[in-house]
Length: 455
Image (cartoon, rainbow, N blue to C red; front, side, top):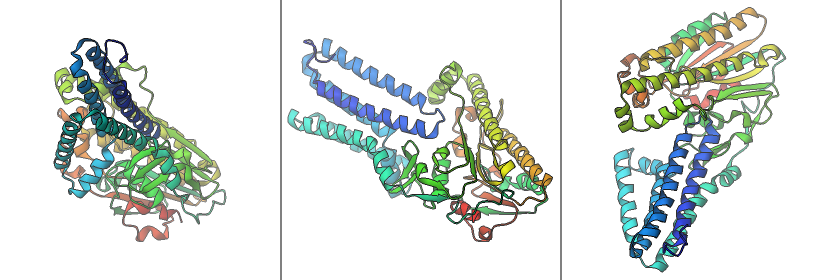
């Protein structure tokens, strides 16, 4: 395209821009394959539009614009690609700078923009020899940063025995259930404890400090015992935070009777499990409504243009998709081998995590999802009550509290769905145990140590 007799744009500029954008595509693919929530698909579509538009503009410039501008156009294309790379991949650098700057997001973003702009102005005006060296270095670093992540992470990831190295298998009758209720406030856990009490096994409860403000930060910390403040996928089943690495493929079940049900994290990469089901939302590939909502949801300008009615309709679509995911997780828990054979079950449940079914406020959806979580606990407690001769231990905990600041920024709730009442604002998560209370219960203060209760 750019090598025709009509074009003097350096084809190496086109190649360099494409290499940088291809590294962004690899990064988005890693995230999507790790989380399997289809949240990266709209970003991938935007990337494809940027990439194709950039190539089209270069073609038109090379064919119709004054040749004196060709050199500048090629260089600008490379820096546009680098800007996209920084926006999509450079979150590690941003997180590190924010930590250094005491969490001042505006300051960090302003500093990065200034450095990028100054660097672009300097490099764009340099001679061809120096530009060739800069172009080669920038595109190579951008691609290798992404492409090398799985290799480096796989080498650095430790082997972890889980749930605990010295956990012993059941005698065929004992049942241990670890139930992670996603985004459950400590202050909202009373109904959950009441439901567990119906098992007739005795219930104890306390509050814990969450080790992070998101599932991606907390679950890896629970499995590894190390903190993941800047967690990001760095492999198909591997997550990194600075020098910390957790590869789920290097987590080994410490006993032969472990069942896992969950979503979001690649739990089924764990080795030695008796059974595992990892659920994901239904694919939006051929669902025009979900694509339309995903695109509008990512733009405040577009959301304002289409109006609140459209946002509410999209909220209903998103809530229905989430509810179907919840149903799948509930059914997987019901059919786990544990109930017949005994053993250990870890289940990560997308409740009371928003959104909720139908139209409503964040508060009403959270309350409805909490009620649904209580009904799930009721069914588990009923199983325990029906078999008093079996030894039951049921541990209910959470990764982080409800995040009103996050959810109120979503299009679904920003038009009258917020704020939430003060009673729903919390900074702690619950720890509830029904049945035999593990020795570590009294000493645990953060949910990073939750699996110490599996001793």
